[in-house]
Image 1 (tube, rainbow, N blue to C red):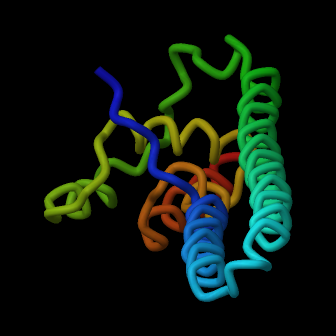
Image 2: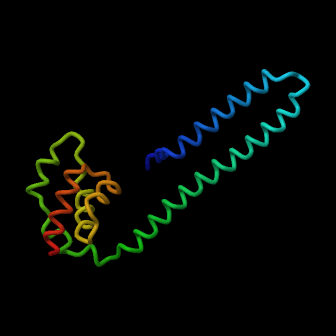
Image 3: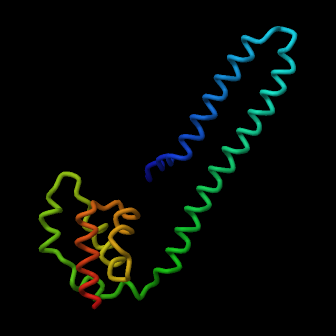
Length: 149
């Protein structure tokens, strides 16, 4: 079973903002004079509806952007990347000590990073997209660059 994805920082900020807006609306409604409550309630419902639409649009655009990025990556990667020689030059001797650390990435992720590095992805990309430590990403990217040249 796949773990649930963690909310992104932007999505969390939007949800927190909506919750804060709701608390403020309830406070304003509770402290308003009785005669003004219907007008204030109508304005608050309109504001809440607008906030909901904004939240939905932000979440939808973030998810669409992630799906598009995955689709573009899948179109870029083809079967020619995964040949019998795909791991030639992999710096196992340099990587081995880093695999013994408590939070070390799995060997499959390192092999994947190696393949991306040999196809031109830099250390920053490896670090960000494959969640690798910076020193390991630089080791793989630099070694792959030397292999290609």
